[in-house]
Length: 149
Ligand SMILES: CC(C)(COP(=O)(O)OP(=O)(O)OC[C@H]1O[C@@H](n2cnc3c(N)ncnc32)[C@H](O)[C@@H]1OP(=O)(O)O)[C@@H](O)C(=O)NCCC(=O)NCCS
Image (tube, rainbow, N blue to C red):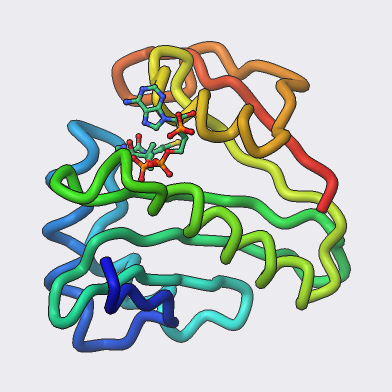
């Protein structure tokens, strides 16, 4: 991954993003139209990890005016690029962006059965502070995690 880059998403990335979303999540997917809106939303940061023309991952951060709490709404790494440290790099990038916007805490939700993602977040210092029963489309519970930035 010598030519790995992490950058803001652009309109021309929507097809690739929708493809990555479909390949990454069996349900609860972000619709293409939402990605399009998020690109231009000042309260969102949609970041892509690319290698040449290939989209290898993305993260989506949401902010609220007047709040120092940022929310990681989604993150995914393409199957062929997993376990290479890219998820960790996208998280670090998201944290840097949140800090640059004056945020002091980052929160996220994760499926209680998503062991890989939970390990990633815990390794980065995120700690569980609550649960949302029945949060996902299929009824799975969400674990809520938070870290001080
Ligand atoms: C979760 C996800 C983003 C991790 O991305 P990744 O690039 O593979 O993660 P990294 O290579 O940076 O791994 C970082 C740490 O995460 C944990 N981890 C990652 N994949 C793991 C797996 N399959 N099993 C257990 N732990 C895992 C490990 O602690 C790892 O650290 P280590 O390599 O020192 O052991 C990726 O698996 C993914 O896109 N999954 C599908 C979408 C998804 O579930 N997104 C999260 C929604 S909340």
